[in-house]
Structures are given as structure tokens and as C-alpha cells.
Amino acid sequence: MKAINLFNKWVELGKDDGMEVNHTPSVDYMFNLIPKKILKSNFTFLDIGCGNGWVVKKTSSMKECVSAVGIDGSENMIKKAISKDMTSTYLQMDLNNLNAYTDSFDIVFSMEVFYYLTNPQITINHIFNHLLNKNGCFIIGIDHYLENKPSLKWPIDLNVHMWTYSILQWEALFRSVGFKNIIVEQFGQKNDWSGTLVLYGEKH
Ligand SMILES: C[S@@+](CC[C@H](N)C(=O)[O-])C[C@H]1O[C@@H](n2cnc3c(N)ncnc32)[C@H](O)[C@@H]1O
Image (cartoon, rainbow, N blue to C red; front, side, top):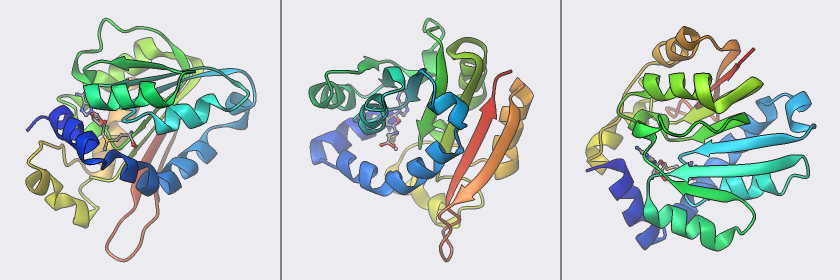
């Protein structure tokens, strides 16, 4: 099944609301990694794979946020996002085909999306080269990766393709594009759960 179809169904079942509850601790941790010099001056924000828009909506309420945009391929997610947030911009787009989209931002963010993409490297290259302003930052969180053993059954359980990269492989994708001040951390480890893998990089 395509990831976008799965997440369209999740909206019908009301399961998208659970993502806000489950992802909030990791997302809060990720925002704390974003330098204050970016967050405390006027900034623009893009959420890649924004789901129902809860992160975009929260961010656009920060007084320094001058514009917030969410992109997602799921029609139901985007419809729900628009219905709950009149301030931000939501676009239904396939992240595997972002070439035509070149608006640029100070912060590009993404939570629990990149392993679904056909070619994460191509999307990361496009973000670095076209969607990020100079001195901007890119931050992603992912829960499905090789070292996080409980997540390894998800592709079969959900019947959706996911790239099961190791932490080093994800880091290599960031390094190869040219990001600076790269941070790679895991947040929320508990028992055999290895936590959210957080990757951060700056464009200088
Ligand atoms: C696990 S959800 C995360 C949503 C949101 N970031 C959150 O934390 O609540 C993954 C999202 O990625 C989107 N997605 C997956 N593959 C996509 C693609 N190729 N193009 C656009 N969106 C995609 C799905 O529609 C879904 O909304």
C-alpha cells in the first residue's frame, strides 16, 4: 500500500489525532535543538509531511513566525489541517516529486516521514539546494530505523514500504549534501525502544 493511502485511512479512523499525542515529546525536543537565534528572530517554517497540521498550527502561533507552510500527500490530512487552521498554508503535494516547489524557508522540519519516501536522498538534496535559506536549518525525527528493534516489524504490520536505514546511513545522507553543525541524537529511549532518531543540520 502507498503511505499516502494509509494515512488517508488514518484520518477516516481518527488515528491522526493520536500522532499529535505520541509525537509531541519528540517534537518538543527537536524544537529545543533549533538555535534561539533562528527562533527568536522573524522566521519562516515548512513542515514536510505535516499530517493534520498540528505542528504547523502550533508554530504559526509563535510571534516570531512570519509564515508557516505544511505539505502532505494525503488529501484527508490536508483537508483536516485547513479546517483547523485559517492562518497557515497547506499544500497537497507528493514529496517524491517536489522539483517544481522551490519556496525557501528558515526552518524545514519533518516528523516521522522520511523513511516512507521513494528516495530520501533526492528529497534531502532538494531541501538543501532549494527549500532552505542561507543560515537556515533542517531537522527531522524518525522512529523507524535499524537500531530501533520494535519498529522493524512496521513495514509488514502496515503493509507499507519503509527504508530501514541505520543511524550511520541517515547521518551519511545529511553529510553528503553539505549540511554543517550536524547533530544526531536519540530521544526517549525506554527498554528496547531506542527512541526518536533526530537529525539536524544547517545550511551555511
Ligand atoms: C506518520 S505521519 C506523520 C505526520 C506528522 N508529521 C505528525 O507527526 O503528526 C506521515 C505523513 O507523511 C505523509 N507522507 C508519506 N509519504 C508521502 C509522500 N510521498 N508525499 C507526501 N506525503 C507523504 C503521510 O500522508 C502522513 O501524513
